[in-house]
Length: 326
Image 1 (spheres, helix red, strand yellow):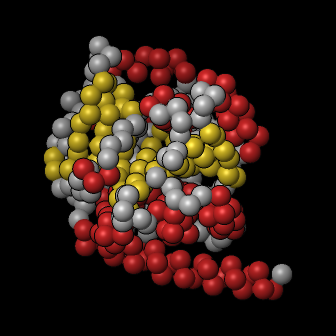
Image 2: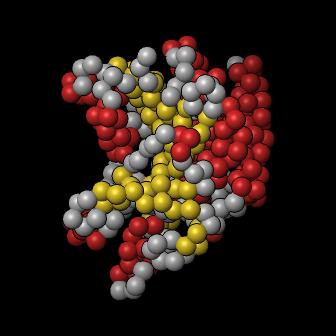
Image 3: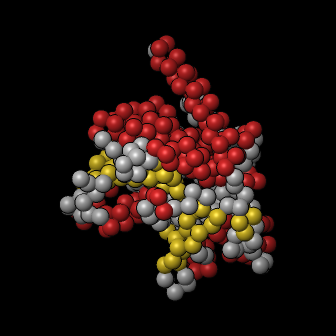
Protein backbone atom coordinates (compact mmCIF):
# COMPACT_ATOMS: atom_id res chain seq x y z
CA UNK A 1 0.00 0.00 0.00
CA UNK A 2 1.26 3.47 -0.89
CA UNK A 3 2.21 5.75 1.98
CA UNK A 4 -0.07 8.78 2.10
CA UNK A 5 1.51 12.17 2.77
CA UNK A 6 -0.31 15.49 3.18
CA UNK A 7 1.64 18.76 2.82
CA UNK A 8 0.07 22.15 3.57
CA UNK A 9 1.45 25.15 1.72
CA UNK A 10 2.79 22.84 -0.98
CA UNK A 11 2.68 25.13 -4.02
CA UNK A 12 5.81 27.20 -3.33
CA UNK A 13 8.84 27.74 -1.11
CA UNK A 14 9.69 25.14 1.51
CA UNK A 15 6.52 23.15 0.83
CA UNK A 16 7.29 22.73 -2.87
CA UNK A 17 10.92 21.80 -2.19
CA UNK A 18 9.72 19.27 0.37
CA UNK A 19 7.31 17.64 -2.11
CA UNK A 20 10.10 17.22 -4.66
CA UNK A 21 12.37 15.68 -2.03
CA UNK A 22 9.68 13.31 -0.75
CA UNK A 23 9.13 11.93 -4.25
CA UNK A 24 12.89 11.48 -4.65
CA UNK A 25 12.86 9.38 -1.48
CA UNK A 26 9.80 7.33 -2.47
CA UNK A 27 8.46 7.79 -5.99
CA UNK A 28 5.40 5.62 -5.23
CA UNK A 29 3.97 7.90 -2.56
CA UNK A 30 0.44 9.20 -2.62
CA UNK A 31 1.28 12.87 -2.13
CA UNK A 32 -1.62 15.20 -1.40
CA UNK A 33 -1.00 18.91 -1.96
CA UNK A 34 -3.03 21.02 0.46
CA UNK A 35 -3.03 24.50 -1.07
CA UNK A 36 -5.06 27.68 -0.96
CA UNK A 37 -4.70 28.44 -4.68
CA UNK A 38 -5.99 25.54 -6.76
CA UNK A 39 -4.57 26.73 -10.10
CA UNK A 40 -1.05 26.97 -8.64
CA UNK A 41 -1.51 23.54 -7.08
CA UNK A 42 -2.54 22.07 -10.45
CA UNK A 43 0.61 23.44 -12.08
CA UNK A 44 2.77 21.98 -9.28
CA UNK A 45 0.99 18.63 -9.58
CA UNK A 46 1.70 18.46 -13.33
CA UNK A 47 5.36 19.32 -12.82
CA UNK A 48 5.79 16.71 -10.07
CA UNK A 49 4.16 13.98 -12.16
CA UNK A 50 6.28 14.89 -15.18
CA UNK A 51 9.42 14.02 -13.22
CA UNK A 52 7.90 11.16 -11.13
CA UNK A 53 5.20 9.49 -13.27
CA UNK A 54 4.81 6.51 -10.90
CA UNK A 55 3.73 8.76 -8.04
CA UNK A 56 0.15 9.55 -7.18
CA UNK A 57 -0.32 13.27 -6.62
CA UNK A 58 -3.67 14.75 -5.64
CA UNK A 59 -4.90 18.13 -4.47
CA UNK A 60 -7.14 19.37 -1.69
CA UNK A 61 -7.99 23.05 -1.60
CA UNK A 62 -7.66 24.52 1.87
CA UNK A 63 -7.02 27.93 3.38
CA UNK A 64 -5.88 27.44 6.99
CA UNK A 65 -6.81 31.06 7.75
CA UNK A 66 -10.45 30.18 7.03
CA UNK A 67 -11.99 27.57 9.35
CA UNK A 68 -14.88 26.83 6.99
CA UNK A 69 -12.27 25.91 4.38
CA UNK A 70 -10.46 23.69 6.90
CA UNK A 71 -13.69 21.83 7.76
CA UNK A 72 -14.56 21.34 4.06
CA UNK A 73 -11.07 20.03 3.25
CA UNK A 74 -11.14 17.70 6.25
CA UNK A 75 -14.43 16.16 5.14
CA UNK A 76 -13.00 15.66 1.66
CA UNK A 77 -9.83 14.04 2.97
CA UNK A 78 -11.79 11.64 5.19
CA UNK A 79 -13.76 10.55 2.14
CA UNK A 80 -10.60 9.95 0.10
CA UNK A 81 -8.19 8.37 2.59
CA UNK A 82 -8.34 5.56 5.12
CA UNK A 83 -5.19 6.83 6.83
CA UNK A 84 -2.46 9.46 6.53
CA UNK A 85 1.10 8.37 7.31
CA UNK A 86 2.72 11.82 7.38
CA UNK A 87 1.26 15.31 7.62
CA UNK A 88 3.62 18.22 7.05
CA UNK A 89 2.10 21.33 8.64
CA UNK A 90 4.04 23.85 6.62
CA UNK A 91 1.65 26.62 5.49
CA UNK A 92 2.34 29.94 7.19
CA UNK A 93 2.54 33.70 6.82
CA UNK A 94 4.69 36.58 8.00
CA UNK A 95 2.63 39.60 6.91
CA UNK A 96 4.24 42.94 6.13
CA UNK A 97 7.56 42.31 7.89
CA UNK A 98 9.30 45.51 8.93
CA UNK A 99 13.08 45.50 9.30
CA UNK A 100 14.67 47.28 12.25
CA UNK A 101 17.54 48.94 10.38
CA UNK A 102 19.24 50.14 13.54
CA UNK A 103 19.26 46.63 15.03
CA UNK A 104 20.51 45.22 11.73
CA UNK A 105 23.57 47.44 11.47
CA UNK A 106 24.44 47.24 15.15
CA UNK A 107 24.21 43.46 14.94
CA UNK A 108 26.45 43.28 11.87
CA UNK A 109 29.38 44.45 13.95
CA UNK A 110 28.71 42.32 17.02
CA UNK A 111 29.63 38.79 18.09
CA UNK A 112 25.97 37.78 17.68
CA UNK A 113 25.80 38.40 13.93
CA UNK A 114 25.27 34.72 13.00
CA UNK A 115 22.74 34.29 15.81
CA UNK A 116 20.90 37.41 14.67
CA UNK A 117 20.55 36.18 11.09
CA UNK A 118 19.72 32.59 12.04
CA UNK A 119 16.90 33.64 14.42
CA UNK A 120 15.95 37.18 13.24
CA UNK A 121 15.78 38.05 16.93
CA UNK A 122 15.13 41.78 17.32
CA UNK A 123 15.09 42.35 13.55
CA UNK A 124 11.48 41.92 12.46
CA UNK A 125 8.06 43.20 13.44
CA UNK A 126 4.81 42.51 11.58
CA UNK A 127 1.39 44.08 11.12
CA UNK A 128 -1.36 41.58 11.95
CA UNK A 129 -5.08 41.73 11.13
CA UNK A 130 -8.35 40.03 12.04
CA UNK A 131 -9.77 37.21 9.88
CA UNK A 132 -13.40 36.52 9.01
CA UNK A 133 -13.41 34.07 11.94
CA UNK A 134 -12.58 36.92 14.33
CA UNK A 135 -9.06 35.63 15.05
CA UNK A 136 -5.61 37.13 14.58
CA UNK A 137 -4.50 36.19 11.06
CA UNK A 138 -0.98 34.97 11.90
CA UNK A 139 -2.23 32.87 14.81
CA UNK A 140 -5.05 31.31 12.79
CA UNK A 141 -2.86 30.61 9.75
CA UNK A 142 0.27 29.35 11.47
CA UNK A 143 -1.29 27.61 14.47
CA UNK A 144 -5.04 27.33 14.94
CA UNK A 145 -6.05 26.35 11.40
CA UNK A 146 -3.58 23.48 11.58
CA UNK A 147 -4.79 22.55 15.06
CA UNK A 148 -8.36 22.24 13.78
CA UNK A 149 -7.09 20.22 10.81
CA UNK A 150 -5.41 17.76 13.20
CA UNK A 151 -8.54 17.49 15.33
CA UNK A 152 -10.67 16.77 12.27
CA UNK A 153 -8.23 14.27 10.76
CA UNK A 154 -7.63 12.31 13.99
CA UNK A 155 -9.45 9.22 12.60
CA UNK A 156 -6.92 9.10 9.75
CA UNK A 157 -3.91 9.71 12.00
CA UNK A 158 -4.47 7.60 15.09
CA UNK A 159 -3.57 3.98 14.35
CA UNK A 160 -1.64 2.25 17.13
CA UNK A 161 -0.58 -0.63 14.86
CA UNK A 162 1.35 1.71 12.52
CA UNK A 163 2.20 5.22 13.81
CA UNK A 164 1.54 8.41 11.88
CA UNK A 165 3.62 11.55 12.16
CA UNK A 166 3.00 15.28 12.22
CA UNK A 167 5.93 17.47 11.20
CA UNK A 168 5.64 21.20 11.84
CA UNK A 169 7.67 23.87 10.09
CA UNK A 170 8.83 25.93 13.06
CA UNK A 171 11.57 28.54 13.28
CA UNK A 172 14.57 29.59 15.30
CA UNK A 173 12.67 32.84 15.62
CA UNK A 174 10.30 31.06 18.06
CA UNK A 175 10.89 33.08 21.24
CA UNK A 176 9.29 32.51 24.63
CA UNK A 177 9.58 36.24 25.31
CA UNK A 178 7.09 36.88 22.49
CA UNK A 179 4.50 34.36 23.71
CA UNK A 180 1.96 34.75 26.51
CA UNK A 181 -0.68 32.25 27.69
CA UNK A 182 -2.97 35.19 28.50
CA UNK A 183 -2.68 36.42 24.89
CA UNK A 184 -2.10 33.30 22.79
CA UNK A 185 -3.06 35.14 19.59
CA UNK A 186 -0.46 37.87 20.26
CA UNK A 187 -3.07 40.57 19.69
CA UNK A 188 -1.20 43.02 21.92
CA UNK A 189 2.31 42.47 20.52
CA UNK A 190 4.35 43.34 17.44
CA UNK A 191 5.99 39.98 16.70
CA UNK A 192 3.09 37.62 15.92
CA UNK A 193 5.26 35.36 13.74
CA UNK A 194 7.71 34.63 16.55
CA UNK A 195 4.81 34.05 18.96
CA UNK A 196 3.08 31.69 16.53
CA UNK A 197 6.21 29.61 16.02
CA UNK A 198 6.75 29.28 19.77
CA UNK A 199 3.09 28.23 19.97
CA UNK A 200 3.80 25.57 17.32
CA UNK A 201 6.64 24.20 19.47
CA UNK A 202 4.32 24.06 22.49
CA UNK A 203 1.54 22.42 20.51
CA UNK A 204 3.86 19.72 19.18
CA UNK A 205 4.85 18.81 22.75
CA UNK A 206 1.17 18.73 23.81
CA UNK A 207 0.19 16.56 20.85
CA UNK A 208 2.82 13.99 21.85
CA UNK A 209 1.60 14.04 25.43
CA UNK A 210 -2.03 13.48 24.39
CA UNK A 211 -1.71 11.35 21.26
CA UNK A 212 1.40 9.14 21.45
CA UNK A 213 -0.62 6.38 23.10
CA UNK A 214 -2.98 6.48 20.10
CA UNK A 215 -0.17 6.12 17.57
CA UNK A 216 0.35 9.75 16.58
CA UNK A 217 3.74 11.45 16.98
CA UNK A 218 4.73 15.06 16.43
CA UNK A 219 8.04 16.82 15.71
CA UNK A 220 9.19 20.32 14.81
CA UNK A 221 11.83 21.23 12.26
CA UNK A 222 13.43 24.53 11.28
CA UNK A 223 14.14 25.38 7.62
CA UNK A 224 16.49 28.18 8.68
CA UNK A 225 17.15 31.43 6.84
CA UNK A 226 16.31 31.15 3.16
CA UNK A 227 14.91 33.31 0.41
CA UNK A 228 11.27 32.36 -0.22
CA UNK A 229 8.09 34.34 -0.99
CA UNK A 230 7.84 34.98 2.75
CA UNK A 231 11.29 36.51 3.15
CA UNK A 232 12.30 37.99 -0.20
CA UNK A 233 10.42 41.23 0.45
CA UNK A 234 12.31 42.02 3.65
CA UNK A 235 15.54 42.97 1.89
CA UNK A 236 16.45 43.74 -1.76
CA UNK A 237 17.72 40.70 -3.73
CA UNK A 238 21.30 42.01 -3.92
CA UNK A 239 21.46 42.22 -0.11
CA UNK A 240 20.41 38.57 0.21
CA UNK A 241 23.14 37.69 -2.29
CA UNK A 242 25.70 39.32 -0.03
CA UNK A 243 24.35 37.84 3.19
CA UNK A 244 23.61 34.23 2.25
CA UNK A 245 27.25 33.02 2.30
CA UNK A 246 27.50 33.81 6.03
CA UNK A 247 24.12 32.34 7.04
CA UNK A 248 23.58 28.71 8.08
CA UNK A 249 21.21 27.18 5.54
CA UNK A 250 18.82 24.70 7.13
CA UNK A 251 16.67 22.15 5.29
CA UNK A 252 13.86 19.80 6.25
CA UNK A 253 14.43 16.51 7.96
CA UNK A 254 12.22 13.56 8.90
CA UNK A 255 12.71 10.20 10.54
CA UNK A 256 10.70 7.34 12.05
CA UNK A 257 8.28 8.91 14.55
CA UNK A 258 9.03 6.58 17.46
CA UNK A 259 12.73 7.49 17.40
CA UNK A 260 12.30 11.25 17.78
CA UNK A 261 12.60 13.12 21.06
CA UNK A 262 9.38 15.16 21.56
CA UNK A 263 11.33 17.89 23.39
CA UNK A 264 13.84 18.37 20.58
CA UNK A 265 13.74 20.63 17.54
CA UNK A 266 15.54 19.10 14.56
CA UNK A 267 17.54 21.34 12.27
CA UNK A 268 19.11 20.21 9.02
CA UNK A 269 22.18 22.40 8.50
CA UNK A 270 24.70 23.05 5.74
CA UNK A 271 28.37 23.92 6.19
CA UNK A 272 30.10 26.64 4.24
CA UNK A 273 31.46 23.91 1.94
CA UNK A 274 27.99 22.54 1.13
CA UNK A 275 28.00 19.44 3.34
CA UNK A 276 24.64 18.69 4.98
CA UNK A 277 24.22 17.52 8.56
CA UNK A 278 21.53 17.40 11.25
CA UNK A 279 21.75 19.31 14.49
CA UNK A 280 19.34 19.20 17.41
CA UNK A 281 18.09 21.82 19.80
CA UNK A 282 16.63 20.61 23.10
CA UNK A 283 14.44 22.45 25.60
CA UNK A 284 15.55 23.93 27.86
CA UNK A 285 19.09 24.11 26.54
CA UNK A 286 21.62 26.70 25.52
CA UNK A 287 21.63 27.38 21.81
CA UNK A 288 24.86 26.64 20.00
CA UNK A 289 24.76 30.15 18.57
CA UNK A 290 24.33 33.05 20.97
CA UNK A 291 24.04 31.00 24.18
CA UNK A 292 20.46 32.16 24.76
CA UNK A 293 18.04 29.92 26.64
CA UNK A 294 15.12 28.35 24.75
CA UNK A 295 12.69 27.58 27.55
CA UNK A 296 9.85 25.17 26.83
CA UNK A 297 8.13 22.87 29.31
CA UNK A 298 5.34 20.31 29.17
CA UNK A 299 3.12 22.06 31.72
CA UNK A 300 2.99 25.25 29.64
CA UNK A 301 2.41 23.15 26.53
CA UNK A 302 -0.55 21.39 28.18
CA UNK A 303 -2.06 24.69 29.37
CA UNK A 304 -1.76 26.08 25.85
CA UNK A 305 -3.37 22.92 24.45
CA UNK A 306 -6.31 23.28 26.83
CA UNK A 307 -6.67 26.93 25.76
CA UNK A 308 -6.87 25.78 22.14
CA UNK A 309 -9.54 23.23 23.02
CA UNK A 310 -11.62 25.96 24.67
CA UNK A 311 -11.17 28.23 21.67
CA UNK A 312 -12.15 25.34 19.41
CA UNK A 313 -15.45 24.91 21.29
CA UNK A 314 -16.16 28.62 20.94
CA UNK A 315 -15.44 28.87 17.20
CA UNK A 316 -17.36 25.67 16.42
CA UNK A 317 -20.40 27.06 18.23
CA UNK A 318 -20.04 30.38 16.41
CA UNK A 319 -19.75 28.73 13.00
CA UNK A 320 -22.70 26.42 13.72
CA UNK A 321 -24.83 29.41 14.74
CA UNK A 322 -23.78 31.36 11.65
CA UNK A 323 -24.60 28.44 9.35
CA UNK A 324 -27.97 27.94 11.02
CA UNK A 325 -28.86 31.60 10.55
CA UNK A 326 -27.87 31.54 6.89
